[in-house]
Structures are given as structure tokens and as C-alpha cells.
Length: 99
Length: 237
Image (tube, rainbow over all chains, first blue to last red; front, side, top):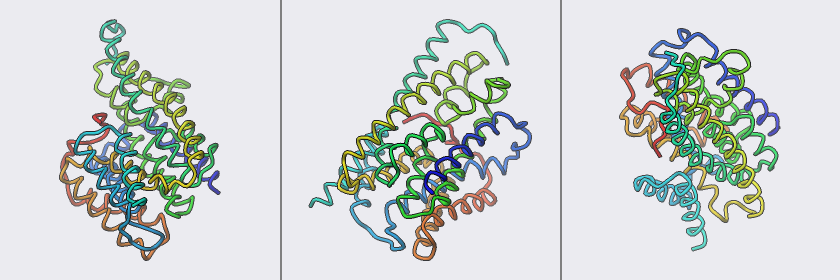
């Protein structure tokens, strides 16, 4: 089942790229379409952050992951590079769990 | 638009920029590999994602939804929704890169945030192609090597929770989102989307809350006109 998702989503994501290079620009040039398409990643990423950090099954919890996210915010404010943000958050969450 | 002659100095400048962005971005693959294995994917599945899907946010989304207990279908749909922005990049790149046939089919795989950012601003087709190929190919090679390294390392580590790798996923999404939050409408969208997703968590199957948040983008897009200054692609890290 996971293989099915990996392969079909992988191929479909490629086709989305190819479609952009291939279809006439006019088709998607409507400002409203562009605006919504531009907002979709913002909404999805924000929802992914929220669910990754605060959901545990069907319950909402505040645990070490929330403290890890707090560390990520501080690192981002300090303009830390991506890898430092990601592994810094992991390290903080791991340390919190040890305590 | 096409200018057949590309000044050698301009060319090496574009290559240098592309390599810099490519190396910085390609190494994220380590975090993706470690996170994906932690989410329960095999090393082969993890590497297949980087080879086939090759668009970081979608890859993180697929494994993130799976890690949260979502179905493979909802994970795949979330990845696809995030992948639609590459279609918009392609629309902007097509007249500039001006490739047809097999070259276009091959080039399509490299249409991602960074390769787009490093080529849409170029003044000519040759300059855009150099920027696109240098950035895209550097990232493709490094991203896949780094994914394998991260996946093998992640498997050797054992339970990902011990190392806080479950917290790393949220941090990765936040880092991808961060540059967009300078815009007011984007901040509003992000807050409402997060609230809607969390509100749905107790009542829906895992994976559904994230997909439902796309509706927030639809609604705010309809109701709130105007330009977004932080529109992707953006490479500033």
C-alpha cells in the first residue's frame, strides 16, 4: 500500500511539473486561479505543522514536539539554515524527553 | 527573448550561484531520509520518493501524513496538492527555457522551487537554461545521495522518537513555510488553516485535516484579492 502511494504520487507529481511546461500559459493565467494556487502550499504547510506537532492519533496534545517547534521558531528568527532548524528541533525534543 | 551569446563571466556567475543554492538545498535530503525511515518507510521506498517525486515539500508531506497514521491515499493527495505549485513554475519557465520534445520531458523533472528561482529572473534563454540546469542537476544528485545517507542513518538509529525525529517533521514544514509568513494574507491563511486542521483532528481520520485546510486557501483566495510579495519561488534561506 505504501509502495502504491510512493509510485503513483511520484509519477503524478512529475506529470504536474510536465503539465506546467507543456500547457499554453493562458489556461491557468486567471489571477484568481493563480492566487488560490499560491495560497494552497501556505495552508497545507501550516496545517501540516499543526498536525505534526499537536496531534497524537485523534487527540490534541502538547508534548516535547511543541517545545521542539518553539526551538525551531527561535532558530528561524535567528536565520539559522534549514538543517540546523530541523535537527535543532529534534535535539531539543529528545532532550526534553530525557528529562 | 532568446540571446544566443552568453558572456563567459555571466555564465560562470550563474553556475556559481546555482551550485551554491544546489549544495545548500541538496543536503536537506539527509533530514528527509531520516524522517521518512522514522515514519515507517523502507530505505527503498524512501529513495524511490526522492528519485521519482523529487519535490521536497510533497515528499515531507507524504511521509508526515503516514507518520501521523493517515492512509497512503490521503498522504498521496496532500503531496499532489503541494506539487501543484510546480505546475505554476512550469508555466512561467516554459517560454523562457524554450525547450521542446524529449528535452522538455527531461527538464520537467527538475522543475522545483530552487531551479525555478535561479532561472525565472534571467534575462535570456541561455542564461535561464544554465541557471536551471546547474541548480536542478546539483540538487537532484545531492538530494538523492543525501536521502540514502539519511535513510541508512535513520535505520541505524532505531526508534525515531528517542532522537526527537518526530519533532523534526514539524520543524521542516515550518522552515519551508517561514519565508511566506512575511505576507499578511499568508499569515492569516496559515493561522486559519492550522486552526481548521487542529479542529478536525478529533473528528476525522488522520490525513483529512490537512487536506481540508486546502479549502481555507480556496476561501481566502476568493475573498481577499491582491498581490503576494513573498510568492514562491524564493531561495533566501
